[in-house]
Length: 315
Image (cartoon, rainbow, N blue to C red; front, top):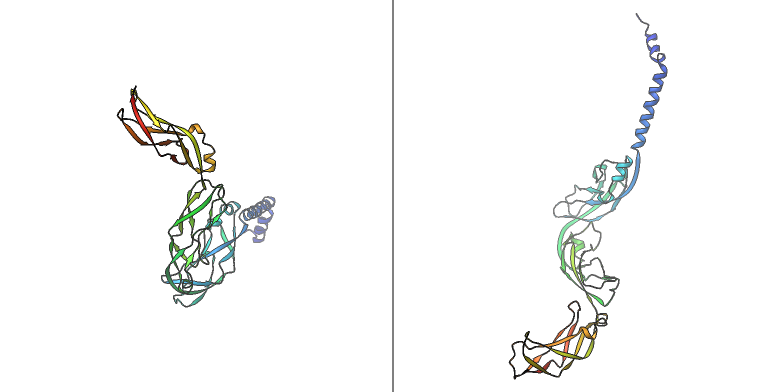
């Protein structure tokens, strides 16, 4: 029968170099794996309180917590900070009560494959009120910057929104504001949706709708320019045998628009005419004068005089 001492001794002595090497390799693997998954990163995470029907948060001791996350470097790199939040659901059902809530790792959402190592502070004190709703006015959005030319005029819809939150706070709120509209360097009118801003802590109130549509009109100062002695042309049927006498033969055209547009219009680009199609020969007419300018030019026009005398004669 083998000596037990010799059996134990042989376990340590026989092939001892291989056994020591295996232990070393195991230790190295353990620390390598531990090092690969032991990275840490801290984030500030907002707190979201989900209340029951008819309940609202009147106040809370903190609005965010500092959370340290651990995991592999790749998993931490994939962590999206915008998706992180601490969601708590209080047990208190008394609208006038208060409660201390412990924030635990399972309250943190948006983790992915990482784990929560610590949460500071770990408690949240809440006080409650009854939830109420009221219609409030939306103040006219402000502008940021200045247009390249002219001024910006704003109109927006809707001009009122529904605001839900703690009754005691809603009693003192009659209006809310919006995000400003950037008009810097603008030359043309445009439409923009902007967010309605919470009248206080964003977690307290619910706003519906959360956006308003703003119509921004870029208004430029209009000036006038007179183009003198423009010949009046007669528009007739092709091949018509009649001659057209027009009195007066020359008129003045008043152009009204933005100064930079008027400066780019040449005298030759302005045409005036009378429509003589289907008129009878040897008859006298007083016809309105029409103005033609390039279609891409944004101007208003007027003619002096507005009408001319026209007579068709057989050639």
